[in-house]
Amino acid sequence: MSRVLKLKTPKVFRPLLEPARYKGAFGGRGSGKSYFFAECAVEYCLLNPSSRIVCIREVQKSLKESVKRLIEDKIKYYDLTSCFEIQSDCIKTPGGGIILFQGMQDHSADSIKSLEGFRVAYVEEAQTLTERSLEMLRPTMRSGSEIWFSWNPRNATDPVDLFLRGETPHPRSIVVKANYCDNPFLPEELEEERAHDEKTNPVRYPHIWRGEYEPQAIGAIWSREVLHRNRRDEIPPLKRVLIGVDPPITSNPHSDEAGIIVGGLGEDDRGYIIGDYSKQGTPKEWASAAVAAYDLHEADGIVIEVNQGGDMVKHTIHSIRPNIRVIEVRASKGKHVRAEPISALYELNKISHIGTYPKLEGQMVLTTSAGYEGDGSPDRLDALVWLLTELFPRIIRKSVPRNATPARANSNYKPLRHHR
Image (cartoon, rainbow, N blue to C red):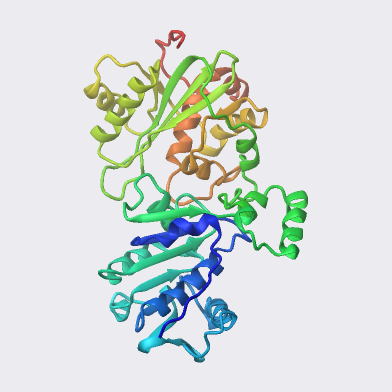
């Protein structure tokens, strides 16, 4: 069988035409991600007769929730009904192959083995894929196979984002960002919907149409709108730089991360967040990372919270660098109460992030006046709150009752040198 398909591939997707173990396209509505991968599935079956493809979602209660209809439409559009046999629950492909449609939640460690020998797994709505499902799927797809992902990001901690867009993405992956503006075939009706949302729903518009992370929890004391509004590209002259550290309580493979955030006070008296070096590891590992950040940014001190093993934290840092300056602070309020005066600085446009910090910002927009609504502990946010509290002490003094213990617990505090 020899058929030539004249596919009009938008420029944004062309890198995905190259061979790769993992291929990903993320972005907002109207980008054409699903249409591209549906065409790829049809073309793959024509070029590789007898191949087996599985189209996956985390949860698929019925075939109506799958991409089956979209693939069927592509088969009909390109007049390929004589090559494919569309059945009620699957699609038979040239040479005795098949396209299946399944939900990962229906699989167990044993049943997933039924997918061994499949050449392609296409994961639609991959932002909902759990870590368990990703761990089961990857080794199941064996030698010579490919795994495709399309998704609209929710949070930086979503397993697919960590795997393909995290600090160490898989080396055999190709990932592109695609939005409505990259789609030359965007229908007029969809453009009207986009323009309407841009005017009437500015908070959620970046997530829906531009593939940005979900805006925030209901009642969040930070908003992505404020973070984006004050974002800057270059670090201005700074007169003081601090490293905020929020250490984990335990040290094991499942421990929380150590929050390690770098911030400075500009000569314009605005605050700037200039680095996130948070990591999971032993006390020696996170203390070494904090000292390395201190050296890299020529910082004036390391701010630590001492409620949990204070002497131990200070000792751990001094074991790496004996003479480094450590500023100890003690929490006298709950996390969200300490965070509120800092969030007020953001609302007043007094704080800018230099670049983007997805994990830190994800914790910020999940913090409400009632507490933190994310998973685990907001270690990065806590580290940010400590260093900004030290950079803007008047904010905290105004928010602490007269009889309360001040946040700064170091009685030997002296003004720090100016940072140039």
